[in-house]
Structure formats: C-alpha cells, structure tokens
Image (cartoon, rainbow, N blue to C red; front, side):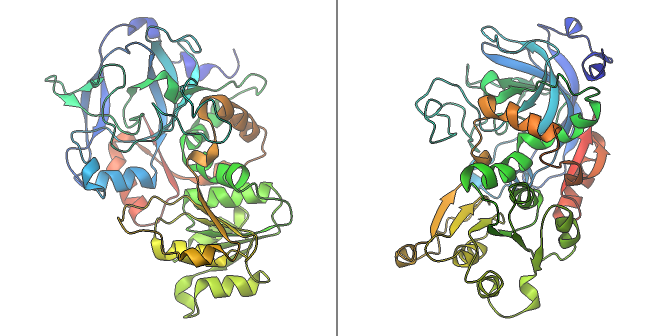
Amino acid sequence: MAGQEFATENFNPNDTKGKTITCRAAVAYGPGEPFVVERVLVHPPQKMEVRIKILFTSICHTDLSAWQGENEAARVYPRIFGHEASGIVESVGEGVSEMKEGDLVVPIFNGECGDCKYCKSEKTNKCERFGVDIMKKVMDCDGGTRFSTMDRKPIFHFLNTSTFTEYTVLDSACVVKIDHNGHGNFNPFIKTLTLLSCGVSTGVGAAWNTANVHSGSTVAVFGLGAVGLAVAEGARARGASKIIGVDINSDKFIKGRAMGITHFINPRDDEKPVYERIREMSDGGVHYSFECAGNLNVLRDAFLSAHEGWGLTVVLGVHTSPKLLPIHPMDLLEGRRIVGSVFGGFKGKTQLPHFAKECMDGVVKLDGFITHELPLEEINQAFDLLIAGKSLRCLLRF
C-alpha cells in the first residue's frame, strides 16, 4: 500500500511481541561523558504501556542540558536520553486500545492521561500523572525500568520518552498516533515528524495557542534555535507584520529569514539595550515577545520589549538557575503580561494529530528545521554540532 513502506520494511512485530529485545542504544553514564552506543535489553510493555520501534530521533537543547547535568538534582545514570522521535508501534501492553502494532506514532514528553482534573480542563495542557517531569526516571506502572544492560543492570528513563534507542517503552499517555490517510506517499514526512515531539510543537503552539498571535501584529523572538524559529514560523503563518529575531549568533539570521524573521538584532552589535532598540522598531514595543533562551537577562529584555498596556511575553526557555524573575511587581501595573508555555499549550493526544495534519498540508513548513542527519553511532558529533550552534536539529537514523 502506498505510503506504508515505513511500517513493513524489515519489521515484523510478531517476531518480537512479548519478548525482550536486544538492540542498539546511546547510553549516558555520567554528566557530560561521551555517549556509549551499545547493545541493551528492552523489556516488553506492561499495563497501559507501548513499545515502539524508533525510526528517527532528533536532538533538542533539553537533551543537551540534561546530558550535561545542569540540574544536579535530576542526575541519574546510566540513562537513555532523547525525547523527539517518530516510530511505529511494535507491541502494546494490557489495556491499550487506542493504538495497535504497526501504527505510526510520535512520543511526547508532556503526556495526556485524559482522566485527571488537568486533562479535563480546557485551560491547561498539564497532566497530573504524565506531565513533563525532569526528575522522573522510571515507569509509572511499577516504578521499574524497561531498559537494562546486557548484564541486567537497570538503565533509567528520561522525560517519559527515551528515544536514543532502536526500541523504547512509553506509557500510552505519552504516545500519539498519527493518521496520514489521504497524503499519498508519506515517507518523506516521517523524518520531520520527529519535530512534533517537542521543538516545532513547542514554538508554533506558543504563537498559536499561548499568545494567539493575530494578523498584522508585531513579534519579537529572543533566541533563534529550533524553538525560537518555530515561534517565528507560527507567527508568519498567523500573518504577523513584523517578526524581530534576536540572537548573538548572526549566522542564524540567514536561516531565520526563510522562516519568517523580517528584522534582526545581534545584542553585541550595539551598546543600546535590546528592548530600547525593539521599541524604536515597533512604535513603542511589540504585541508579543517570546523568550526562548533560558537566560534571565534575556527574559527581562523580552518583557520590556512588549508594549505597555497590552504586550504579552511568553517564556519558553528552560531556566536551570535558582534565581527568580528579574521583574519588579510595579512593572506589571503598566499593562505588560508574562506567561509560561509548555509544549506550546497543545494537549498531546487530542490536539497534536490535527496539528500534524496541518503540517502535512503545508500550513507550517518543517523542512528547514533539520540541518544535519547522522547515524546513531555519531551521536557525540551531533551534540558537538548543537553546542557549536551549527545545527538546529540533527536527525539520528538507525
């Protein structure tokens, strides 16, 4: 059947269902230590769990900061990192009914159980049981791991996902089935599908769901990594008239122009504060500013770049510092607002499939986000590219 080659080529779930699988994985044994690509054991899914064959995975800054151990309290090893991927269901555990073997899926770090008070609320995409939790290292069902070394020692999970491996096990609340019927040969989209697990969904969703960017509005994006550029792409799709990109790496401006950035600021090019420059460019400030750098000084600039009276600042950057917001309460009385956004405000299981369809229909352009592609064995080189600021997303193939 056209478009189904991804599910059948060299893959027969009947060969592995109910069995422990031996496969390759990139395992981290300590903060900042090189990944070791080795054979590991992946055990069968338990109640309400799903085992997935990973087709492609990509590397996010969250993987980088977690691997480097920036949050000491969250350090645990050995561990399999990674949270952006596309894959196919190999087998399901007891009680899983919404997906089956062979389904195309993406993992999500911010799950949706559908039963808790958060999942039932239209005001949030938080989930009580399976929300984003950098501290979580084991499965919800029994407190155990589904990974182990060849000598049966446990390997810990990461962000409900763990995708730097040929096979992984997730809670079903953290797996989203993607329907691609009617899109012909779907194979070219499978690579970019990894971006929906985090980066693109987080950025575009922040523009669409959290800020609700309107046509003709002005926008400033601080930090032009994959998430920041996804914000710009989302703002472009919504018809923003001016999208100002801010980054200390001028090389990112070239890529940004293709994704909707209309004006650029490198903070190092002028001693004048960035927020003053943005105010001059936007008649007193932008409608929406997005902080995607995880830096408190940048966050203050983003906040002060928003227009008095109606400006909204959306925080997307991961802040590992224990320092608090650099904003005086009186600043809020001038009418500027500030809000955080996780996973772009998307409820993963109920809303992500429609967003995937919009991406397939070309509403959001995904191709430009993947700048490099390497085999799993070169994962350390892939991280070097990210550290050097040379890649937006490096895709790892198996």
